[in-house]
Picture 1: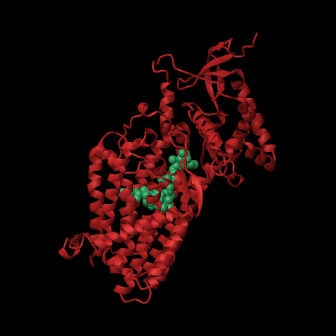
Picture 2: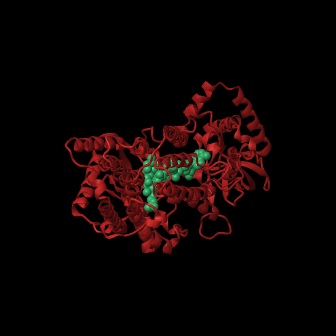
Picture 3: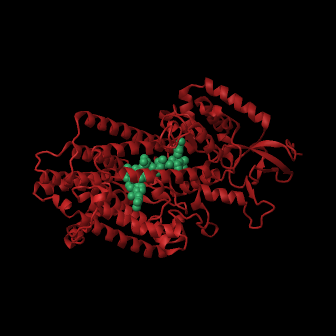
Length: 604
Ligand SMILES: NC(=O)C1=CN([C@@H]2O[C@H](COP(=O)(O)OP(=O)(O)OC[C@H]3O[C@@H](n4cnc5c(N)ncnc54)[C@H](OP(=O)(O)O)[C@@H]3O)[C@@H](O)[C@H]2O)C=CC1
Ligand SMILES: CC(C)=CCC[C@@H](C)[C@H]1CC=C2C3=C(CC[C@@]21C)[C@@]1(C)CC[C@H](O)C(C)(C)[C@@H]1CC3
């Protein structure tokens, strides 16, 4: 006769299937045949658990206290050893696992992420968890149960439907799963209801407004008096909007970059798991493409190709890029009709043609191994931006009869070269960003990558060709310091988060304080991520300010990029906060309480 340790109505701690996380649950019944307890979580999810996966509240507290005291006396070397043993803690990318193993892993991740909205572990609910020791203690609790969890195989747990539902699925669970891993839910259960960018009317506005804004900005920038009051569409400016030769150059540039991206140099890495559990492979050779492009441009200058041609035909370059981005978007929209459910982006499949055209229906459109979105995001526009900057530098010298470029032009070129080179050096990290993982590839990104980036991000260099910015040595030094500080914050924050997400137990990151979340992931609450909730955005904005300040205060045009970035990052932050609140629930609230400001300390 089995011992029944718990009675119906008892509140106990139940382990969440597939994880080492324990939540407060209520015992509903015990089945003497299967030896399973039916328990209910706070959000109403019912599960059947083994006796070994249930602890009494008192026993759990004692175990926690014991593991805390053990963790204090444990040597760091031992901690490191035991941490690295856990398969869940090894880097996903660094390991060379087979697809089967990866699928298993994904299944496991899904299970862990299906965590209900529950009061997290006791050590998680108090403010004390902000200390490293507490955090370590939580790790020890998890370590203690690792062997047990290794013994758990499928069939031990049984997800049962709630009695009041007829579709056979626990509603809360499906809802939660949708929020955490939207790709994991079959399409018919998930309809995109939240329209972004002002919905169907909004995207019509953006479709027309964005191309016109760039055109207006370029026209304004070319005028000697670039003040808004002086804006005029005089014939000489609008006359040459199209040039076939320029169009040919833009097409050649795209082909050149495409060839570089296909060169068998650089490592091949796997992207994030897709809806179907598979991963796509990406060749990472962006930095090499930058070097080869620089050599090609250097060679062209050496053979006396006049790069100031780019400045003289800047409007035509823009219209060519605009046309190509429109053609690309149409191609993407048409081909997405053949894309399977698995290959579609949630946000761009609403059924509204214009909205879906703008947002993008297909997630990772590919021609064989050539990933069009990844290519467009990182290559032609970004590297093109640097080439345009350099062409503007030469144009400035030519137009102003200078032997050397102005200090302002040098600063702008240098700063932006650093930013782009940094992005290409860390190209692999883009694979985890929402643009690649979540957003479809439609007009917004196609236009953004091919037209917006190269023709608005270059506004400072373009402006400086026909305007002067006299900078004192003091200003130059101050601006350089500002850019260095911004870059440090931007890089540190991004690298720290990336490294932490890849391997949370990395000893090099053990100084970080974290908040555990119900999904099994932790949130960093110290260092830069404890300063504001988006330190990487802050760093980016400080750099953007340094770039604008290099052009003085005479006109608003050099501040165009800064204004864009503020709008984009504030919107992106709101989008991200919304997602994180849904994903992490009370842990995110906790994080927001500890780290009060989003981007600008004391202000926002
Ligand atoms: N110049 C430009 O045009 C643009 C530049 N950028 C730059 O790109 C970079 C990346 O930006 P973006 O992808 O938007 O956002 P982030 O790199 O900031 O990623 C946000 C995600 O980070 C995770 N996260 C948030 N807080 C924490 C925390 N405390 N601890 C651990 N993880 C946390 C969450 O994901 P999870 O928990 O699921 O891992 C969250 O969804 C930024 O530097 C930005 O400035 C971005 C857009 C445009
Ligand atoms: C108005 C409009 C059409 C906006 C489109 C926005 C896109 C241009 C940007 C959205 C996020 C971007 C990022 C980069 C380039 C611009 C876009 C695509 C980025 C790849 C540049 C290189 C950086 O190092 C980065 C990787 C941080 C960055 C990521 C976001």
